[in-house]
Length: 146
Ligand code: DQA
Image (cartoon, rainbow, N blue to C red; front, top):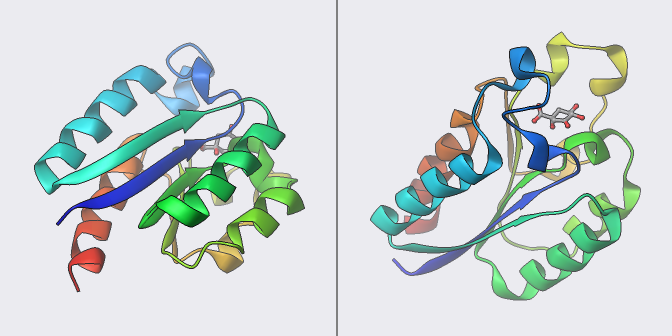
């Protein structure tokens, strides 16, 4: 099953492993990328792993994914709660979209409970730590096989 998965990460996620480790854990984004690539290889998925602190760059990457991806896994980070631009870009995408959050955004501050992405996502994984990325890939394996 040769499917192409875009894994897109928003602002400050390049600081994982250093940033608020009590909330986000000890894994760096490099470590998460390594685990995702390893699982993708076993699943016979190709992957594009991307992070940016710039909303514009994320929108451009989503536009690229709209033409090239079979599925998108996205952790929009703080842009989740603010970006209509990212939501509009995702609306271009007809493939499955999984929204991932390392923390449980519903168990935190009120402002994190609103996601512009959730209503248009295929599903949301929130609060399972960095495992959420791997859970998304496991789900996609079943979904894309159908
Ligand atoms: C996050 C949750 C967001 O509210 C926060 O702004 C992040 C990370 C998460 O993965 O838990 O940067 O998306």
